[in-house]
Image (cartoon, rainbow over all chains, first blue to last red; front, side):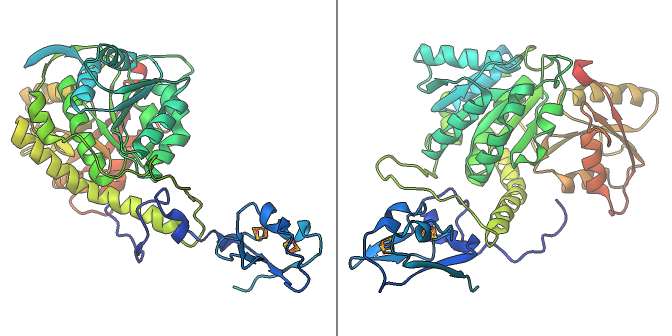
Length: 94
Length: 353
Ligand code: SF4
Ligand code: SF4
């Protein structure tokens, strides 16, 4: 404990991840390695993807599905469930 | 008012005086009397706390974590296998930064089944992020619980108050119970830091990926180091109100000593008697007690040992394949420091021997 910690600091983070508003700073997308992309022209707007996404990372904006990439973990369930094959899993660019 | 009471009852009364709001516990010898007394107090309406009966120590800590998240002051007590059973949730409490306070009556790990004093239970929880105190008397148990709430609520890390099975837990000693009003001045009723609120429900996303996990660990380490200052300040405030002195360590006849016995809990009292005996024979012996194990008071230990010739660490515990745990920690603190004595250790007193 007398040793010096060689580390920059913890910035603006709250004291613990168990805190109100944790979802705002905690972008759970960090572990995604493939990324779903919707081809809106092939989309029938059935919203099955919205219903199936286990992260509730698909929103409905102006009557269309829209993926929130801050929280999408890249599991591919939306692409597998889409009846019109309108969602493609693509390489993640980070 | 001075009263004769066991270490266990001293703990129960301290919990009452601290105005604890939620108690969740599962019985285990030699701790059971603490929560037995508390359940009596709750049943009699003498203590307005919610007493939750649970089916295991794991659940007891889970209930404490939940209640502490709502801003309540919480308490539990355990020993030995019961503490081991809580292990997963000990990490949870500290990493969620909840000021849970718990007494652990140091009892040997099984098999062989043995209910007597031994520190391997709490020392096995060394790296769970809990502050740990080792008390030598019933009075110190009482006082440490009051101070622990204050310290934990400032540092936002939980505290485990340890003391020896039977030597302290079941032995009656005079304990000075202060005025309830004085205690309230020292430790006001409500604590800050409510996380869960039924009137403002929300979801918690406690997943933390590679990008910030280290930062949260850093915050705990930083708080543990800052805790030494908070502990020292709280002890000073406690002394100004109750006129009893505590610190991270305690010294006995150390100023002119050239050899030092380092001990914890009740073994320090025995060591002090040995110091007097050895001094009668002409040795210049002193004793040093390590009261706080986490945060580890390296600075105070180095200061106390500086310029001494020899130091012997007494350990009522063992890290198999290494040595006594306090000895290991003292050696780590002294490593690379100048003017340090020759430090050796002895493992003794296991299972209450
Ligand atoms: S499941 Fe496919 S077709 Fe249906 S809304 Fe989602 S993207 Fe569009
Ligand atoms: S890939 Fe998985 S997490 Fe991402 S939007 Fe699709 S279903 Fe949701």
